[in-house]
Length: 176
Image 1 (cartoon, rainbow, N blue to C red):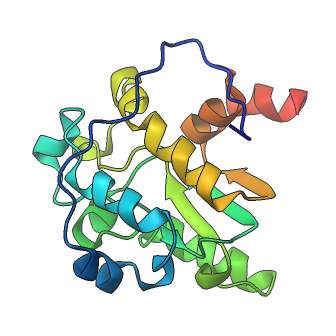
Image 2 (image 1 turned 60 degrees about the vertical axis):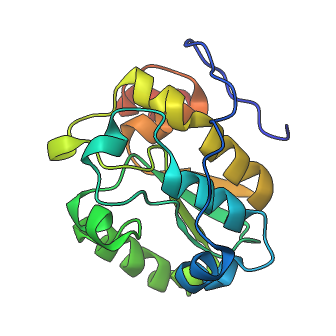
């Protein structure tokens, strides 16, 4: 793997492969991913039942963006609006992200936006360790496929996941 992640919790093997939705419906939902390994992976994510979040979600949210993006944003988990629409960062946080992208002459189509968790935790509670472990192979595989040059962590859980350090954002900023 090109990406090295430090972790304190045990990893789980690759998620069990579930029957994926037909390729045509995936291409309709994720047209930018046609011909990319991200497309069949999105099918796996949409059918995932590796943790209890599958029981409470409306739909899984694989991500959005350019499969060859050199800039990837990683957030925590889908919120209510993301769960409803199946697209990450469409609520208030997404509006801010869109403004930040516009300020540097980029659009969503130029970058890739993912979350650590692919399903919304009930009432937007913090992710549990088991949920993060269950989704970990998906995010690792997405990053391996995309091969970004820069990964931007959006929030505490994404920062901790990417750095492997279980400390506050303030501490992470101090230590770089």
